[in-house]
Image (cartoon, rainbow over all chains, first blue to last red; front, side, top):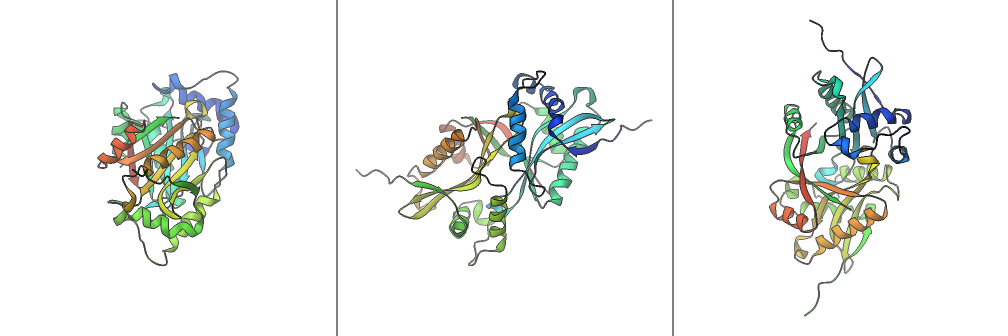
Length: 159
Length: 159
């Protein structure tokens, strides 16, 4: 029996944008939210540049990519947020977690979350948090298996 | 009938730390989470410095303070987070929202949230988000009146 190939991980660079947006759109909710054209709309490049503007190695706001056979098969945005509450606890926040629909069921998402946890711990974070749409029941079970607790309401408001 | 005094707002500086931590601790949950000593433990100053390290005027990660008669009566952490999802939407996130227990019922919290919304809109954010403990039912009603929707689960995991 062959084991699934383990992904390798690296942070995204600007030239990865088309692959990342394709992943973001490869999702039940993302498909109606993204605008996957060739070339991509400038809004994505502008957003990437804004991420870079506040980025440091110690406090990243970066896309982490999972790669198998030189193909980008998964992504998540990892943001380390310093703050004062809970005795100045450094928070790690994730967003935009995606695995390519052609590669699901291979534990790539799990490996990616565990890698994000390792990176965050190494940077001194003691809490990881995110919000997930209440309709994503499968995702909730996935995260609960990885030790996350739905202890909070995730509230949003368009501005 | 006299109207409640309207607060004025400014961003925190390092010398505001004792007042901010006092506010964070002036709360049912915060009172067990914070460490309000004189002088404050260094962890708070270190966390403030970490916030400053990734701060820009365009992409703040700052405490907004509500002030009445030169007294700090409320605070919230406002973080603008650029990212790629939802067509590169800039998100505004709030955290550590507090109003002094001696000043509640004067709509200071509402004024503070509305000010954070105005600042975030001016900086180009189109979404505001936060997580709030599921046991804080009064807070949920407060935020729902201000247009927030509990559309997401807020998931957390200690690292």
